[in-house]
Length: 624
Image (cartoon, rainbow, N blue to C red; front, side, top):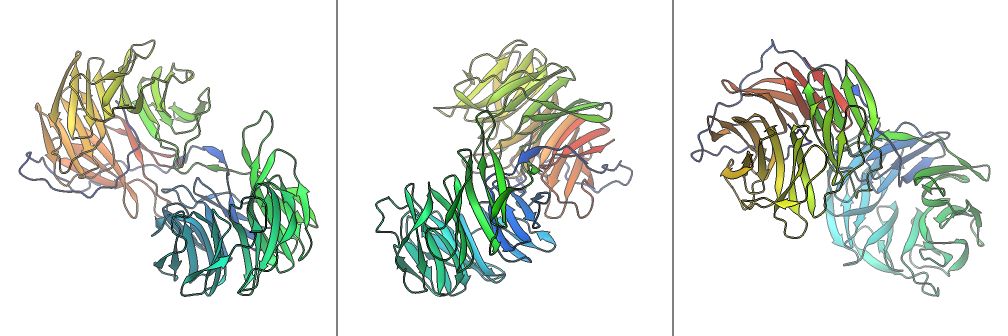
């Protein structure tokens, strides 16, 4: 039985007349056992690609692509917090005061106030960079040359700045003075009403210009540093024109600039950080060939924090950070965070043994009431954005299969095998009917037709088309070694019974697609499946598929015939619903305690009385 991470995004629809609905959701029962308090399974990851904004020497905020927010207190980085745990990627942050920060990613933004981070909300543009002069004024520029204005409550004034150009830099000294630049040497000024071309300050350079790194300290003074792979220059914008460009120390591509005043700035480029004191070329502090500064924030004259890539000949790339104090840069404390959305999967073959996996090397075994960490033997390949989901299926404490990053690992009761890649497909799910039979489903890499691959107890077979033809196959559940059910992109349940394939419409197709996204089949005569397209749940009972009216949508698991549990995240909490064939969905319960930072859960069930839920921060909840 496979149990994977699912996201509740669809609106529940009642489809009457197509298939006979079963009983619907019922009231909660006070006699049901409650979910226990969460137990955290640490999944440490390094802070990578920090973007930094400093309001004073003792207060900076950083965000990163995994959705963390992290404060600097003048001496050390504090423990990272989940800033954008559902959307993940954050690429820029701006803090006009220590009581307000705006952070943006490609499609979402979050706000930090003294109470903490807000929930992620959708940006009206494809967020690239943000700058705020107050809690009621922010401008964000994007990869398509647009900008949007924040008024303290909502976004508006979506404007074309430089059509079809990637805008990567913006700095605002106030609501009537912002400068932006992108993938060319041009700059653009916002005067409170409209954008205008502000000129190309480094057109005299013999090196191709990829933009201008900007920092504005007033409406009449901004520093610009040339973004190029060759020699660097600096120039000052007086509110109307760029003044003459001058040589700047250092070399290599410029990534960031931050000014504490007209007489002190730091520019990050190549392998060095260049301190500039109002004139001249400045002083470039070289860090050697294994550090690449990416972001810098200055909270006062001579008081800055910088962060970037650091690596060695035999070390993995990590993020290092430095603080400027007394004219010297000193290394700051390394910190680790929990991956806020590692694509969690869980499987419990018994009520005393479970396996939890994510998109990283780390997995966890729950045995005898305790948790132990088990590492995969190899590092998964890097992924864009959030890690992909981990799909794990266990038949006993001595055998599991894990699908992660398109590679299959097997568990022998002690350790994980090396990953095996079955070429020719993008794999979506895997389920095991026994230790000698597992079925993986997915889509052909070229034709996008449904394909399978089978584990025979020793090795994986080749990629094979579904014999009866099917589009992308998304989910699978095997009740025995001879019986599996898969769900495809068109609402069909594909059954393979002793090698013979058949199919039937499990969910009526609303549009062109009907994504059967989660399935659990404990026996050959009972199955539950859900569709994220129309937000419906169907069960296989008495030889036919039936819709369940008003069913909750989330992650589902059916440990025995006629009994299932669905977990979901609402706007205010994580909750579970129990299903029985006689009563329908009943026994609604809250999983997370009040004020808990709720995440989307997955659920694994080992029997009528045991439930395990895991959220995206790898916190586990049990119910017995």
